Length: 363
Image (cartoon, rainbow, N blue to C red; front, side, top):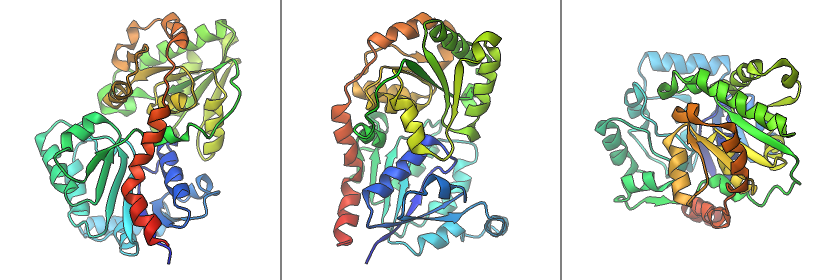
């Protein structure tokens, strides 16, 4: 009998997080996966037969969950779904970030872990308080398996016997796209002010991305401004940057907005000759497809992974982007390639424990 597994993930139409779910489902075709997510995800996963979506944005479900929150009930639709499965997999990257009222909203949901619970592909933080760390240290002891994607996170919890480390899950896509590179540069952008710690950086960031785009246009490159997550403001950021360009250059800048078609988005990256990556997974995918990448690190998670893989090329932290010259970005094309063959292999270690649970029990 096929196992049923509930997926907990960030379901906001973010390319990186959607790829996590795709990789998980395709690895275990004999497992049935259930996820509570917006109904439109049926388009994102239309080619994946073993995932069932419980629509979170259906009016009845929204009202039902609202009433349960108001009466402070321990019950939720997610908890009801969890009772029908054999295990739960929480898969994603930055899923343990300390935000205001985080613990108040999470403790009730997580206090009873009764099913095998796997955390894959995550990093921990950023966090500010010892309370946040201690809460998760106690919580993680009740999980079946936790595999972080960076050494920093692993070191925080390495005293727990169920904690492991492997390279980012998306590295294993390295052999899936063999597209001839075109004379183009993909610039993945974000809206800095979507993040609490980057509230005042929109203007300087947009101006600098505009300068980089213009520089590559002058060098004869096709420039593609790429949005990984419209709901986090990437699309709006592209429009802001585009408006800063001289009118005669705007027509030569292409805009790509990811929403449902993961394969198409991956093709855009795989066909480019260079990546300017503000998005974390633009950096990872660029390396996976053997492209030189110039990272603009908006979070320590990017710095931590660069350190882990031994990246010796140039990069800039977003908060220092005013110091960046476009010619530095252009010159980095010659030296910012990374051999990630070992990371591609190691990334599969994330699934080591889940393999034993699913592959053997499904037979």
